[in-house]
Length: 258
Ligand code: ZN
Image (cartoon, rainbow, N blue to C red; front, side, top):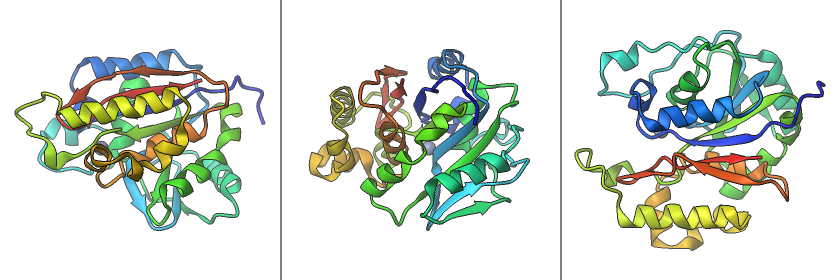
């Protein structure tokens, strides 16, 4: 393997798909985060928007752009993010996650959890991207343990990006009113405090965190990518927050580890 510098790991709060095409501070925050890390050789993305039974990785050489949403302007459906895939990285992920069985999925493209953030970060689309699915048969501790096995990739030039939202409850969002909801802000702060204290246990067993957690984490697919990123934090590694905003019941708060 290469002797690349140890790559940081990023969790990105992606919010609305519109952030992929609107010029706003969050999108600029993603671009700045990309320019502040070494240029990756490849990217491994764990997105809220690919849930499976069993673990899957995208394994095609030219993944298509998936428009996995409805009710947005045509401009968003016109976005194509033409980054190549990396069957080699897919294979490497499969090797690292063994003995867990990993399914190579050659015809799966990139969902908007990946391209909405990677587009602003790497607009040239010249870095290969592989996605790892969220195996919904695992519990949160299972996701965290699985993620730990990806750690060698950080020394192989791979930028690991978790893409979700710490707080995500669309049913609680009034789309005409972006004012942050009290419980959403409280829970976002509670998570940040635990991240700063390196208290991953409480973040894995979030059900014990009460009503704010229940409302904020909801169906959990947007929260789980955070656990992948935290699992890769070394004992003395610093964390940094950016895009630290809550919109209604969606958190844009993003985390850099290392
Ligand atoms: Zn999403």
